[in-house]
Image (tube, rainbow, N blue to C red; front, side, top):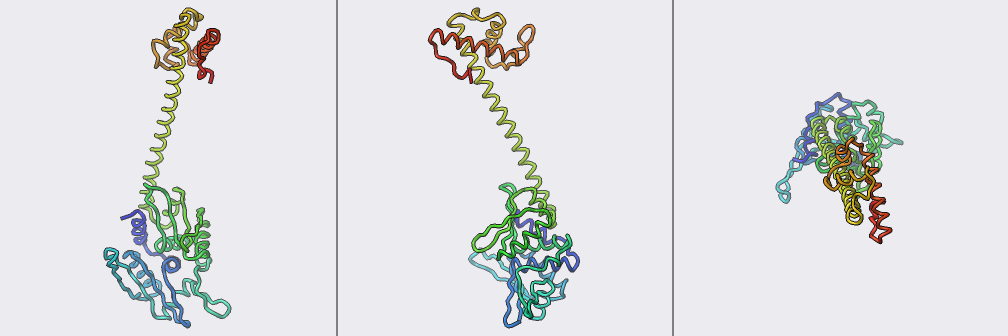
Amino acid sequence: MSFSSNVKKELTCVPLGARHCLLAELAAMLLMSGEISDENGQYNIRFQTENAAIARKYFTIVKKAFNINTEVMVKTNKKLHKKQTYLLFIKESEKARKVLQATTILKKEQDSEVIRDYIDLNTIQSICCKRAYLRGAFLGAGSVSDPEKGYHLEFVSRTKRQAEYLKEVMQQLEMEPKIVPRKGNFVVYLKEGTQIVDLLNIIGAHVALMELENVRIVKEVRNNVNRIVNCETANLKKTVSAAVRQMQDIEYIQREVGIKYLPKNLQEVAIYRLEYPSATLKELGELLSPPVGKSGINHRLKKISEIADQLRDTRGGIKNEESNN
């Protein structure tokens, strides 16, 4: 089962709230995944899903909020490995009208009834109703990617107005969703892990939230370790490159004029660098008597490089360009 399926399964187990919250959740489910027909004022509601738990929750909400028994039909698609689709109908026009009016999907405008792709914002003014609306929207047309692969949560809306309404509700709960058109639909989506966590918390998917948080923590630790390793590797390469240049300069001086050509305070550093080619500046400094700090050793090695370059200039040798970088 996918992560998205687990989230939906968990949401179907969220206890039903007060009637106003039931209406908000039902409205979102109908808008996102329902079909409403109007034939000369005769209304019919059809809700379709491939998830048995979602079908069961839809049935339960309609029963509890309106005391209406929804007609259920199960279709099996043999081409899709006998995958089942659940169709739930409210065929009696008056009962359908009752549901649509209560959710404000059906609204009287200028002496005529209009089926809208959104509901009145004042019907979901309270936080609990906003939570319920977003939960219903996710059950109807939401999905979230496996956090191991990336962070992406989306709602597929049928119209731009519907998508903008959903975006407005999410913004009221301090989220920053974006909308993008896709294959005739409008997708409202979140891509930041923290905001996806916030939304899962809002709609009641607390188990999925913890799973996502655990993945985020592991990823963050892994990324921090990788950054540290990369930094240490870069520093090691830099140290090795510097040591190689220093060795080349000292060996050139030794070959051309001898180590004794150097001032006494540089001779000891040059000898120890030849003897301990992989030693750090700190380790070289501790070998001297009295010990010298890193900056002191670095200064002396730079002086040795300058002397080597001066010799190359006077003797026609190849100058070590890297020592001056």
